[in-house]
Length: 294
Image (cartoon, rainbow, N blue to C red; front, side, top):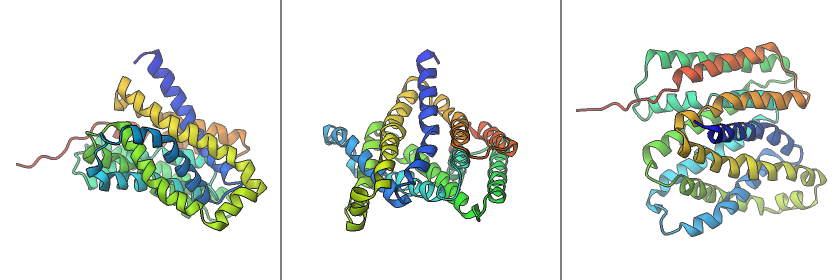
């Protein structure tokens, strides 16, 4: 760890932590499906030069796993978060996202035969308790029933956990940027088809609210998706995956700060929930060992 790695960690935390308020602002002009389709399409286009440059070196025979990572790691959770933030504050969305390391561990145990300790089990239970406490708190403070929309984002973190385990178990030998470029290219294809539907094109071209919201989508694409992905893999390369995972601790704090600046109500219970979730993350973040059979 040196000043460069710390600087990258701070920038990455600020960037990803700001994604939730950008999603909220993007939804003022687009529905969740349009916002996600624009986000994936533009990100796929941004990575297209890399894909072309690396075309012969990309391991295309692994396309089923790349497809899983693209859809389960991007398209589905992006959509669930967009849908969820129509009823749930960006602060709560950012806090729920901290469950990702916990669900990475859960999916690894259930599907990829990873060992776990009693300490890690305690971390899983503590993190989930904090998350569900937060969800019920959000439901009580909102005018509508937000439990279902909060659960959509919990499912999204489970998708992220599934994607991370798939990359580790099935795509470990591929270049990290190759994985990113190809998965976004695969999700950009159906996204572009969806955007070219007449109703969506008419909305994008002629709706004034869409024009205002587009700037937030562009920032989300350039900073929160493309640049942040490159920074994350760079951080892993110059430090370790464990150090890079510390971004999970800072993202919720950034999201809550943005939410408070945007007028979202923040209570002491929110910080108690953050404490429970991050304590759970701390307990589970140990490299699990694979079960071996003789």
